[in-house]
Amino acid sequence: MIAALLALADEGPKIPDFGRGSDCVRENGQFCVDWVVKNFGDQLLPRLIEHIELTLIAVGIGFTIAFTAAVVAHRYRWVKTPFTAFSAFVYTIPSIALFQLLVPVTGLSWTSAEIALVGYTLLILFRNTLTGLQEVPDDAIEAAQGMGFTRQQILTRVELPLALPAIMAGVRIATVTTISLATIAAYIGAGGIGQPIFDGIQRGFRTQFVTAGVLAVALALAADGLLVLAQRALAPWMRARQATS
Amino acid sequence: MNTFVDALGFLRDNPALIWEKVVQHLQLAGAAIGVALVIAIPIGVILGHQHRGSFLAINAANIGRALPSLALISIGLGFLGVGFVNVMVAMVILAVPPLMTNAYVAVDQVDADAVEAARGMGMRPVQVLTKVELPLALPLIFAGIRTAVVYVIATGTLAAIAGGGGLGDIIFNQPSYHLSGVIAGSMVIATLAFTAEGIFAVLQRALTPRGIRGREPEVDAFIEPPVADVTRAETARV
View 1 (cartoon, rainbow over the protein chains, first blue to last red):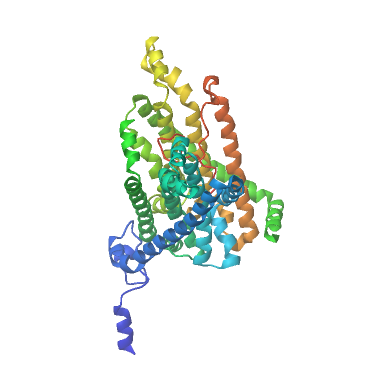
View 2 (cartoon, chains in turn red, brown):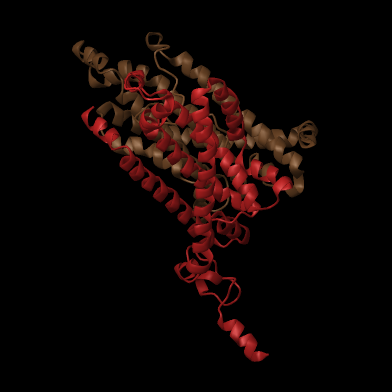
């Protein structure tokens, strides 16, 4: 019995300020580096990975829906207005309210969070894709028609490649927006890096919410930077054009 | 559907509470925008006038858009503590980038011929700035203000978790105010954001010099700088 208790105690404190932490943690100092070092692996890193998953899935699903809708709306103009109206309406609902609204339907869960996050990506991705497609120069399309391209070929070989910069700009904005909103999703138990933020604030443990906040900022900036690089790699002609102008 | 009826009922039954929170919310947003304007506009205008620092000025908006608002508030909470000041600082950080980028782009992209003509007429640099560049840049500067105002009103909801008051006090407190209160609070925020957007759109139009009215196309997508008016948002999202 005693041996078992000792073994349990040896595992180290799971609650950082439960009696055994360092002086800094017990006194809730300005910033306790030792707590961060000790708990990064089991308290912060898994939340960060969850956050990346939440974001990737939301942007992935949102992109599939919005991209399809934009391609359809490009061919059938009447689709544009209802889809824009719907996604703009979703976009105006404060996120914390939308999350809570979904709780009675899909529960305090990951699903509720994803539904809301996908909803917020739609307007950005739809508009950018459609604008990109519509701003393809008529000359390019006429040239393709003259070369005997079918409508399908014009879409995949001319319009979509030329719309790529606008589409990528949309993906970039949607991604950073989702990272930001996903921190709030922790409020309804969706996990992610917002969880240690809310947790830390609730317990008043400064080091925890400051560190988690810094990690969220770092993640957002890293994602933004990566997407800029992807943008350049996918549309190298844009850089050439900017350099000459 | 019933929930929405309840939300309207909540608005009808608690006018004093709603009013108190709206006032707090607007005070916070107003203070943040005020401070952000004082910081961002001079920097943006001066950099634009000198056509310098484009990297900084243009990327500011991108970085500002990427910053998660909850994270900023939580970091601020660690260093500034609970209350109005912490939340205001976080909101200033969020409002400065769109203001600065728009001010920069606005002044930087003023027709070079107009500036040259002004110089040819013997205007000093300060006169060129105040009599030519600023009037022509005003519409776009106002577009930035519009974006920042809407953004700050939406983000103000999060103030509640750091003791900053505002409508977030209702939205974050479902145990006390129930789902009807949460929805009612959100409707009020969305209304505030749309109203602010409308007021600033009208101001923007009124301040546009007659000569360039109707010349600027509405940007219909979230495209990045240097396409002007980028960060335009019709959002009430947090």
